[in-house]
Image 1 (tube, rainbow, N blue to C red):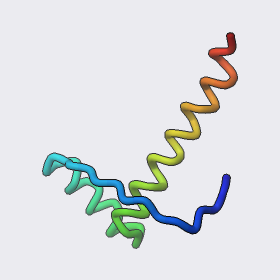
Image 2 (cartoon, rainbow, N blue to C red):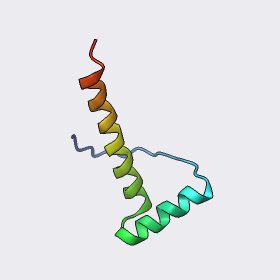
Image 3 (cartoon, one colour):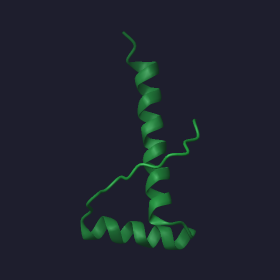
Length: 58
């Protein structure tokens, strides 16, 4: 994984219930909402990319 020094803005809209779930989870693990979402989405993205590399070869 590469380390970037530049930052990029990501804006998302969320319905109330998913946002409340995220707020509760981040409170319980003492993480910011941003850190929580970036970690979760990065792990999912890595999983998708690895699956594409190994299972969808052409």
